[in-house]
Image (tube, rainbow, N blue to C red):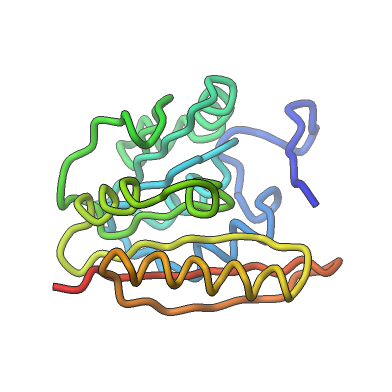
Length: 192
């Protein structure tokens, strides 16, 4: 199941209370991360910016930097989060993760929701880069949504093994959502 938020939605307004429009998947992801007011957060693949809104609404001295390759998604995310951007709590960039200019050891939380780089091809270099961007004690969160429990288990196992092979200690979690979808998260903290 794919979630979309049409721009013609009469209930949509930039920076509206996100509870009315955020998908369960994104709310669960942000709740799972337990974003603190001073966190420095990086989102890889922000889409329309729903998670950006949820994270930024929890920040006071913290900041979220959100990346997406698609100019259309960046435009929509920017429109949705204009007040957070103007307040200095959010920055949205049109860039792929590999090419984005990001400061080392800066982010307390890095996350991605349904981003294929964790499951397709060789993720060694991106995972190593994420590790270098995390502040001491920082945590990486890889969220996914799968159609069956078997797919979710396979995804959790593969992601856990990938992170552990790149020097992370990991934790796993999952939640069942309506219509058979299973939300998954593997989080990891770099060892040493």
